Structures are given as C-alpha cells and as structure tokens.
Image 1: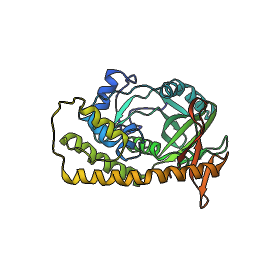
Image 2: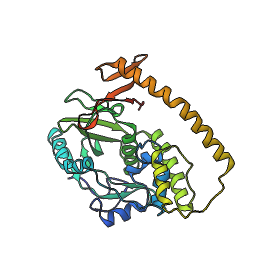
Image 3: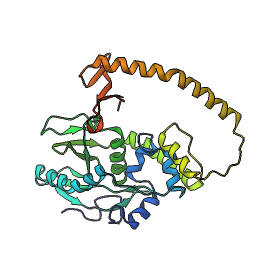
Image 4: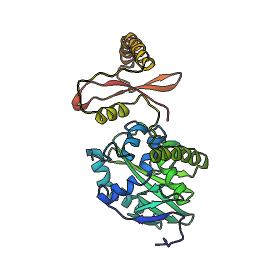
Length: 303
C-alpha cells in the first residue's frame, strides 16, 4: 500500500461505522458528498430546505435504512472485490474513513481510495435496480462521466476537490448482475460552482437563515412535521401568498384533466414499447407497476 501522510491535502478525522452516534455527529459538523446534490437541487428525495432543517436541529437527521440501502451497503465489499480483481495491481484502501478539506465543514467519506501508475483517485460504489438514469458502456469497456447521473457526479466532484485528486472510478452494479465502471475526471468548473452553492448554504445554516421556498414534496412534508399540533387558533395569511395559492389551485384543477387525457393518449400510442420519443429524443417511458400492477407513464428528465 502506498498511502502515506502526504498523498492528499485532505485531513482524516476518523473511521466511523455508518449510522453510529459518532457518524451522525460528524455529519452534523459540515456538508458531506451525499448532501451536495441536495444543495445543488439534484436530489429528488430531499430538498435544501429539509437538509437545512436537519442541520439547524429543527428536524432529526436520521437516515432510515431502506431495503435497497441495506443491500447496497452489504454488496459494497463484494463490488470492491470485483473492482480489485478486474484492476490487478491497483492498490486499494477500503474503509478509508471520514475526512475534511480546506474548510473544516467540507466532509468526505469515500468508499475507497486507489493508487495506480497514474496516481491517486477515488472509488465510489453504486447499486441500482435499473440503469434508467445511466448510459452504460459495453461490458468490459470503462465508460466516462457522461454515463453517470448528475446527482452522483456532484458527490464525486466534491470528493475529488477535497482530496485534490484528478480522477475517480464509479463502480456500479445493476440488477445484481451487471457490473460497469466509469472514469470521472476532475472538473474545476463544476467543483467551483458546487462549492459556491455549498458556501452559501452553510452560511445560512450558521446564520439560521431559511432557504427559499420550493415546490418539492420534501419541503412540504418537512413543514408538516415542524408544526404537528393544531391548537384551534386563527392566523391571517399574507394576502399575496393566499391569492397566489388560490390562483395556482384554480389553474392546476383546470389543467389536471388535460394532463391525464394526454397521458392516456400517449400511453396508448406506446403500446408495449418502453420509451416514447419526441423529435428523436426520449421524453416519456412506461414503467412496470409493483407487485404485478399494470405499467404507468413517467417522464424522462434530461441528465
């Protein structure tokens, strides 16, 4: 192994078990790689407002482990084994622990660090049931950053900047049986843009200044939790906000039936096909329902 104290500009904090009190305490002290996509508005499950509530202690920062998360964690060592087998001669440091960068609140928890004849890099492991958000290379061919979803690229670029490395390898296992590798090179433009958003967000955490409202389910559900009691009182709502809400509700109700009608037409026109094209580009797809339910229509978002 060639991992001496001078191989990176990052500083190691320690090695903490995921989900342990020490792990949660470390997460609360800054912004980690899994959180930067939220700050950049790329996380479909969590908003910047929800993350801000957690960082300021308004909401509990608990990560409930789902079944996919559980198996992703269990399979990480197996996937790293396969990476080592396919990249013989590469030094691999597993369980590298928690680190911080130039600013103490810049946190990194890479899945592994590697070293080869080109230098040092990050290994980031992912598992996915489907490859819908990815662009897969042929088997045995290493892909590049264009095949990795943007919300994962922000995490990888965050780590690369903190460590001062030039490249990372994203190793992904799809459907439990399809292994692929992607090389991601350091992108200073993206790193600087993400850092600017992170700095603004962290200042808002320190100054207790709420982020702007957004239209996400995450923000709505967080606000519900913040005010769980009903005391029977009355509060006058800002007229601008109230009027805007009523106008938006009226517009929503008038277009909802039109959207459903068009979805029905598109779904019927697809027949048994999976993807619908508009001017040659995917814009909708049929997705299988759970437990044998009929397929439904979902939108395809650009990466």
